Length: 125
Image 1 (cartoon, rainbow, N blue to C red):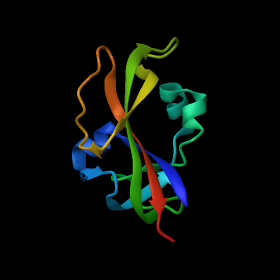
Image 2: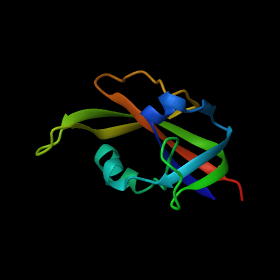
Image 3: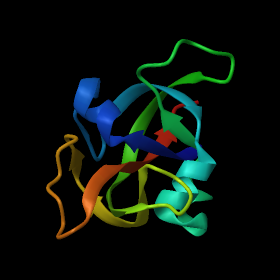
Image 4: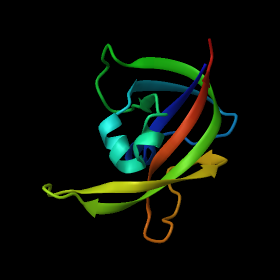
């Protein structure tokens, strides 16, 4: 079974382990934040993301632990803009760039800042 997983930049930078194509991983996953992902990546891309990787929240019934192999990695870079009616900047218009490894530190691409990864996992049965 294949799942697309969102990996936040800040979680990867804080305590995420490096991984690459073909890596075997043991991850805790929680429900993907569809609203945030839609704003950052657009509706079409956000709809393909099944889970979010989780390092920091308390265990909950909606989380699962998986053993899987990494089959695809895309770094995501986005512009930040102030959303009307809000006081915070949010990432928008995310651009996915295929990668062979993830270290949590891809450089900015022009005015686009790194915000995370979309990772495809082949989950072990």
